Image 1: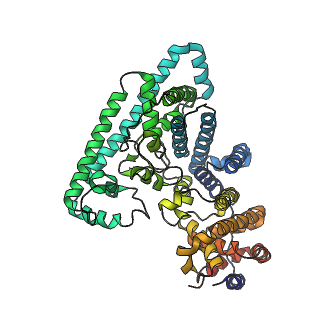
Image 2: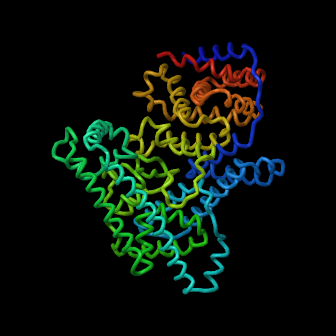
Image 3: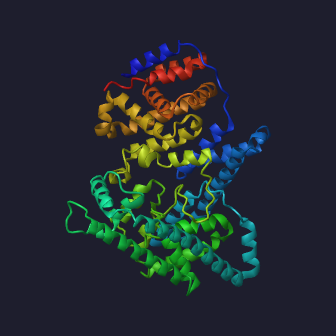
Length: 517
């Protein structure tokens, strides 16, 4: 339907029999705010809003009882973890580095810290560690480095063990079946880079450099499995080597090759960040002398348990690093794609998989990489034009304020598609022509969400309604709403406030037919 038809259907639905309302609750707002912030940690406005909101939550005595529930305690743990990540990243940015290689390692470490946002695993005080360093001087610093190496190696070894177990089991599968699956999967590799399971074999030299490019046969799969085992053996040897020798050189290698394990260490030992900065600065000096490491060992750092670890903007980037399309020749480049993002890698991280915040984070982290980009194509990860980049920035800010009504999961994509379809005139045009109106569509969604969040009565009505409609229905409603002229949008919002008991039915009815195809 075109926008006027959407408005007419909504008005009619608001005249239907009423529904009971429900109160807004703690989980609905704060779990989504935490998830949204974790997925948009690069946006300073979102981070600032989270700081203020979470601090107000903790200081609000009226919320104490709710925070004592099982989910409330998880909200506190994850909120504190998120604040810890923010603080660590701010301190890491103060670590002065000059060479691009060293800066790349620091950026990779920052991305890996992002992935720890919901872990809840903090067990040290900043000040205590710093005071110890001042008191004991060089001896204490050496001990701290030895401890850091042992802990990072411990996490890396757990990663390796998990990965070895996965590929050992995977190698017992029928190679003919895998060959057929890989042949089919390879055709869409550019559109949707492989991210998990045996499809990761597509990144091996055995598959990429086979003679017959038209089909993958059993022999190719067997060679690919053998290559994986060789890489894992190389990585085991590499870790054994890193456990010996000069401590500074070992730590440099570990920071470069495994920022995920390094980030976990920092989350558990935040007071060690100054020491890590010194190690990075030592690597910086080597880089200036052209002594950077150049051997890419990715099976231990990028792939854990058969899952390609996602970067800050989606697993597709890590995939492209491995496939050679992002200059995978150096460890620095590989490290830039080696951040955990909600993946439980057997490294000791305390991810609360049952938490609503964590579930929402898994959905929200792919906002621009998958839900808001059509697939995970290489083009989707190119530098966005200024207008589109600004539009997404506005959406990130507006999304935090309206986090309680954001339709996570499939609803995110539906929301954007509905807004694009309204502008293009039909859903049929979205797949091929959606990019033409992407910036305008995203910007209009941001504007609409800001208007909603600024009116607490409307926000409460939609919060209550969201509990009674599915994610796709809410997404379609918000998408269509965003493309209405401002005057008509205000009319709809006024009607929602006037007839709150009928809002859920109105949202459901207005999304049934969709835009004319």
